Length: 358
Image (cartoon, rainbow, N blue to C red; front, side):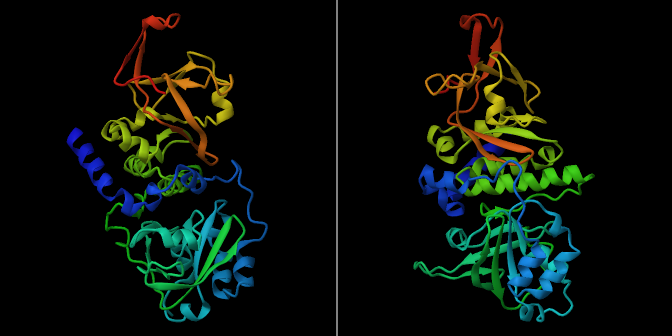
């Protein structure tokens, strides 16, 4: 187990800057990428069909009317083929093409140009991925291709909920193996047939959160969550305590954090910053690690000079990423395991597997 985890960390450490250019950026810029819509995101004021129709994508607009894509209440980026491009594939299903050219999250043209060559992003069509290939020129006007088709009209629509890029060229349905080439640049996830609409929503929100973590400097956490995706997908909600890539590799505890990711996830509870601040000292929080619990060692709400601590670790960034079912808070060090024999005195608390968080 340890050797497998170590190999996992080694591969990530080799490719981290290639796969995620934002890893080498400032913490402020990574924080900007992680900006999250409100807990109950306001839907677009215009239906998707109207937006596509107004932009001249008549066939896609018609296809969206009877597609499940019109009911998705999450930020979405659409790589929209022109009507003339759709004519290059007369046997194609336009509703399916729409799903195959739509991805969760907001991908501006500026951000697409910063992605590593060959980055894969899973689409709304299960197990189907688009491959993003920015041109290798170093100038600011370099082109971006989506599955070999050039984005000819970047950012033609962006209302903060939908982004639409126009593409023109030959189109076809994505291959069933389009996500199979595993690399550090993939944004694909295992597909599990959802038993209910509620679980389907959780899985969509998981993909949304993992995508934003990856592009915001939390690549290791996103990939570790992807490994645990089958377990996480069945939860009704969750609270995740995450370390950014710089912190993980800076103190050299990557293998420990990945192996103990379950100890940093509170299942079936959505604890936003306001809820965390209300927790009393010695409150226990169940985790996905059956042998470990988190304990509030210093209550919140006492100002910046007395920050909240869980297992003696300061919660550095609250509500880093969140949606209706998942919230992620930032840490600078992993949670140590503590054994409480008598909570009335600090001397009776024995700390193991780590040092006190700063």
